[in-house]
Picture 1 (cartoon, rainbow, N blue to C red):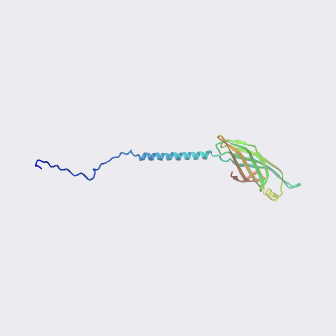
Picture 2 (cartoon, helix red, strand yellow):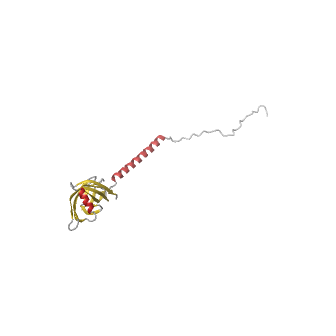
Picture 3 (cartoon, one colour):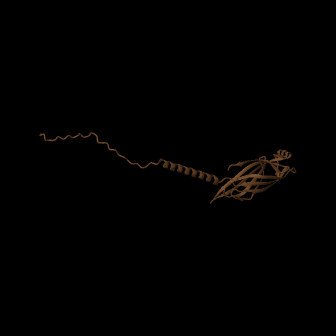
Length: 213
C-alpha cells in the first residue's frame, strides 16, 4: 500500500437503536362539566320522584269521615202493663265529610241504636252526593215503640234515675268516588257510645271508634 493510500475510519454501530419520543394527543378532559351534568340529573330525578309521591298522596282516594253531630232523645217512656216495654224516639244528625278531590256519591246512610250491647232499632236515610272536600249533614229519626225490656230493666231504671242513659250507635255509609273514568267503592263506619241527658235531651259525652275497611 502506497503512502498515497487513504485510511478511512468507521465508527462502530450502536448496539441499541436511538430513542424516539412518541407524543399521543388525547381529547381535552373536562371533569367539572361531567360532574355538573351528573348533579343536575340527580336533582331532576329526585324532584320528579317527590312530585309523583305528592300526586299519589293527594289523589289517592280515602274513605269519608262520619261523626254524630247531634243525638236528641225526643221521649223515653217505660210501660209495665201488661209487660215491661220501652218507647223511645231519637233524632240524629250525622255529618259526612268528603276528604278527596273528587265528588263522592253515597247510596244510603244506615244508623243502628242499641243499649248495653242490645240493638234497639235501625234507621236508613236516602243517598246523596258530596262535592270534593265538602261536607253534608244527614238527619234521621228513629222511633222505637214497644221494645220489651227483660235483661236490662234494672240498668235502665238506674240510668233513668241518674238522668243519663248510655246508648250505642253504629253508623255506616257506602258509596263510590268518581275518579276520572273510574268509580272506586268507598265506605266508612263508626261506632260510638253516646251518653244522653234525659232532662235537657243533650249529649253529655260521646266516645267514638272508627272501623278500618
